[in-house]
Length: 268
Image (cartoon, rainbow, N blue to C red):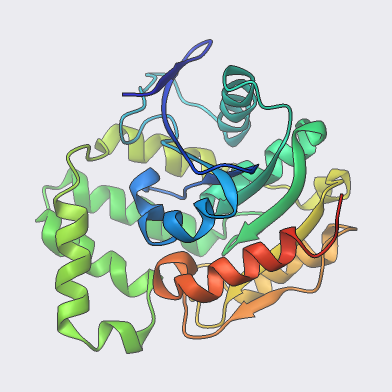
């Protein structure tokens, strides 16, 4: 099992394919298994690196609270461990927060930056939502029901109109052999609620693509558009049809096309 033993954390990682390195950063309560539908398509073009953030999947946890900056530091150390000087970086949702922090603090690590279904901050509404979700877990709610409730925040009504889709998604999460603990979920919530890059976006030097699911109700398109407004080298946002918050799962074909087209649009 590939484990990067870093300064204060052990990170599980996988490398797929060959070519220019592309590192994917998962979102809240998600591990590297969340990228399953796009691994094959992206690894044909890139040396694809996926990993579990601290506190989830097969990576280790820490007892003390941590910040989004700590998670960006983890990636900086992971790239050192893998002897990769720089990579294309893609972050989804909370992973987008981490990607921004990486771009602000370690600009030399990034060729091109892709921010999927994310924003410069976590809204007060979402902070309250996640706090309530944590309370539900701590109260002993049936995990199957908890997952079903969460699905309505991240997928389109069209996908969820099909009961089989719901059952397949629930089964996928329930069968994860490395479930996140309530404590680690709490730490991620606290880290995201304290994140705000609004006044620091000018420090992002990389050419940046902002990907937005047209039907995203968790991080609203207007919130994502703030990234385009604040990052000087951001291209006009790309809106993905037939997708809500989890673009890479709901419309993987359009997601892969957008990523490859952006990265190879210009020769470095």
